[in-house]
Image 1 (tube, rainbow, N blue to C red):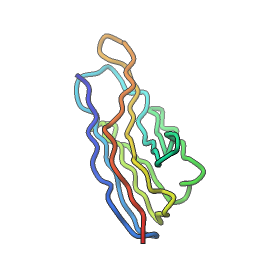
Image 2 (image 1 turned 90 degrees about the vertical axis):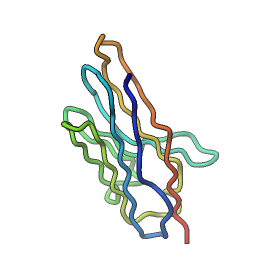
Image 3 (image 1 turned 60 degrees about the vertical axis):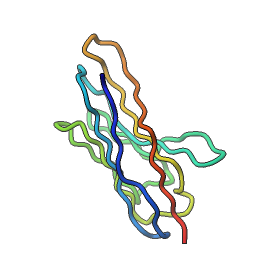
Length: 120
């Protein structure tokens, strides 16, 4: 059984910082990539940042220069450091992991989501 465990998030004033962590547990063959998405009320889920096992990184234009994604490949943990947060960053943030099970079937897992609220 492969599972994701998220932590972090919370409430902060504009300009503040928060961090999110996501760990992948269980037995699997490999990970293609891990990342973070978010969904604000009334909006579709969107990519925030993701990192592939090959080392490439993608960021949403709206977070470039403010958010940093990093990954510990040995521990299968992905981190999201969010600085200079803005009210429009308010959303539920979801961790995502894509890879292969030990039987080589693809998995595409989502975390339960963690709330990030930016408000004065």
